[in-house]
Length: 376
Image 1 (cartoon, one colour):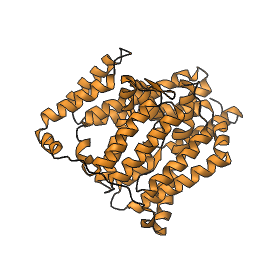
Image 2 (image 1 turned 180 degrees about the vertical axis):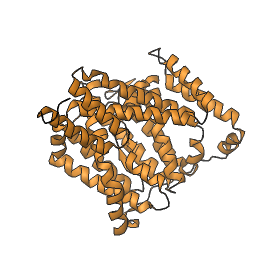
Image 3 (image 1 turned 30 degrees about the vertical axis):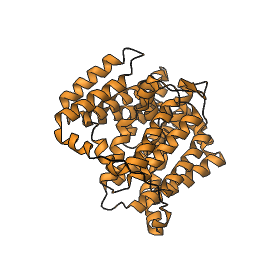
Image 4 (image 1 turned 135 degrees about the vertical axis):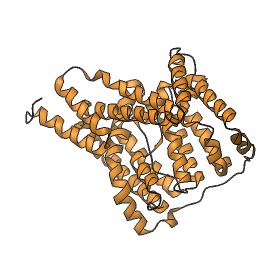
């Protein structure tokens, strides 16, 4: 079924879940470690997944910001909820200014293709390694699910993700008898969001900017804005997007999310690769997922930690592995010019360690070679 330029069918439904490998671990960790209210998190995700699906009409992902999320989850004893919301306010204002002013478009112009491909390659390889790490928790299930996914993806019209999720959820329920009892106690209850801006003090805001927001900015620029725009426009040239629009959307998303107690949000080339790899071709996938997430937030936010237990770590690892594989494979179009390959590989290697440093190093190396300051 096609409605307003988006498809709603089994492949879009399958592709909708192609980003669960990053979505679920971050959301679960924010809830359990940082003690954040699931309602604000799921409400923000749900609303903006629906919005980007309807607006961009491509599988445009909405994800947790990785650098902020990684720091918050790694140090829950020192990173307060106010700092997380403060980083979201800073991020929102920052990208609104860069988007509206056009500064982000200038940054895109100076960011050459080998740098973008390096970021995508490094991120893809990092996802693959993270996926393998998650599969270690249940190695036999991980290997079986990986083999099953490779087989299913050989058939273009088979919704591989739906079968993979059914396999994972089925085995988890069968081999974890206590889970069935927990799931049986779930009940629906409508909850409405609250405004959280009055819970942020100036100390939280400043710490959120310096400790969380600023380190995230280069990663957002390289992956969530420039690389996502490049990927979208290559895969869907009939539905192009501009970095200016993406930056402004980042601003609006994060100001809203911080206001209702959510977490910093972004787009991302990896998320799009995951959606596309598992069948999504339009924004219908994001609308479907957004509706599901929004309903979970409004009616089941008190039980979300239990609901997320049905997704085994090994299955999430398989999803993340194939997302990384799809993203990294895009680098194949870089060509065979040695300077371009060098810049891409240096950027990719550093990106697996620090995305911001990778972007800056790739930029410096590219122009140093172009102006014949360096020779490779």
